[in-house]
Image (cartoon, rainbow, N blue to C red; front, side, top):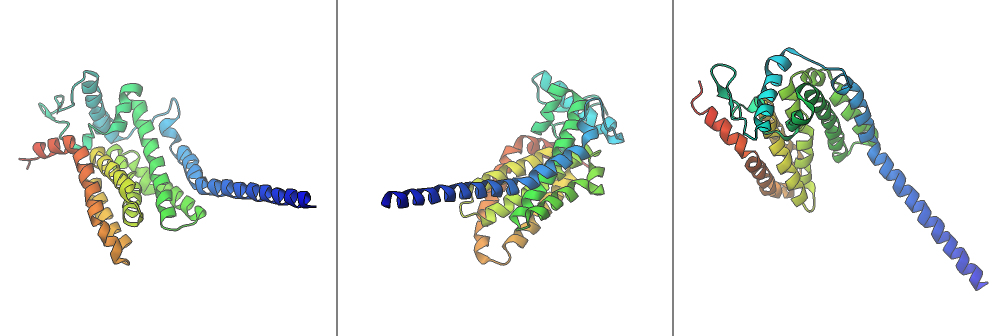
Length: 270
């Protein structure tokens, strides 16, 4: 009788463990579903940019963005920094032109894929980044998986977003904005914020290196408003201002080679 009782208890324990494992797997699946759905829809929305044999070209693409990437690619292939664009106006700053994004790492894809194909892939990747980042932000703010999925899809499919896909320098910055807010929220709310500080540093550097000054300014104002919104109802969260400042400072240091060039190029501008 005792042996039978022990066997019964072991069987119940095994069933309980299996149930817990299944529940954990289901929870992970539900948690990952918004990001998978957003990624699939994002790939469909951007199919004209990445599908083999197809290209999307706007006026800025061939008049400005494409030539800037060509200058960067040409210099890097010769193991030089792309300091000067000597093809227009008798020579103008290139590294010091923030819209050229000469040191933005994803633009190195042009070396491997060529300018036309790389630009399409970079745009598509940043639209996906925008959608996934928005879903991450929605989840951090307490939305359900369905709400997070809707937030990501709407962010990608909005007409204002799809318009930016043919404004290369702008989509590069815009895509990082939800990720920036995720990093800010994590620094303010995490029990151990140092990992979030590193994420904030990387995101800050990416935005500063990505290009378009107008969008960079907007990202700064947005982050400032987010800090107020995330911390306003709890005075303890204001203690994380130092962590936020450190993260932004490290990001500035990472982006400093391009920022110094920009400051030098615009020192005596009109």
